[in-house]
Image (cartoon, rainbow, N blue to C red; front, side, top):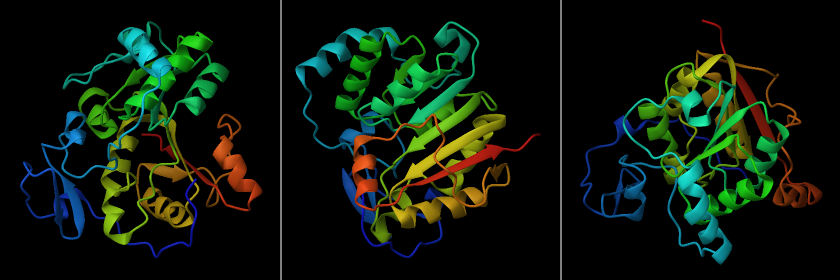
Length: 268
C-alpha cells in the first residue's frame, strides 16, 4: 500500500496540453512529464504517448505461465478497433462490470465469485497479474470473467459502446505521487468523461485509493464531470462487494486510511 504525507493537488491537464514529441524515443521528458515512445515495452499495449502505467519486470511463476498459456486463449479477448458485443463475448445477457487494473487478480476473482449474476471484463497490462488471474478463474471455475491485456483507455474508446456498462471498478491505481507525474494519474477529466459515456444511466464508477492526496484529486475530478453525481456526501463507505486486501488490512491496522468514491451516471 502507498503511504506518506499528502502533496498539494494540481489542476488536471489533458494530453492535448502537451507539446509535440518524438514518439520514436523510448522515453522523453516534455513539460516535466515523462513521455513513452514507440520503442518502449508499453507500446505493445497502447499507442497513447502518456500512460498511467509503466511495465516493470515481473517474474512469472511456472503456474502463472501455465495458466496464461492454457486459460487466456479460452477467456481472453484481443484488442481491436471494432465494437465488442459484450453479450456475445460472455454468452449471455447480464450486467457488465469493467475492472481496470486488477493487480494479481484476487479482488476481481472474489467479486466475480460473489456476484455470479454479473459479468466482469478485467483489463490489465502486467503479464504476471494476467497469469495469476487466469489461475484464480480456473481454480474457482468462474464463467463470468473475461480478460484483456491492453490499455483500458483504448479498449473503452475503440471497443465498448456508450451506455453498455453497469459499473466500472478502479481499485488502488498508481497515485503517481510526484507533482511532475500527476499527468500520468489515470483519473483525469478526459478519462472520467469517457467512463461516464460508457456507463448506462444509473451505472456507477467506484474508485478506491490509500493515498489521501489522490483521494481528494479523485473527488475533485469526478465531481466536475456533469454526467456523474456523487452517491455519498464526499467519500463513500466501502461497499460490501469490495473485499479487503491483505495489504489494506495491514495498513488499516497501522492506522493508514483508505478512501472509496462511488459516483453514478445521471439519467438521460
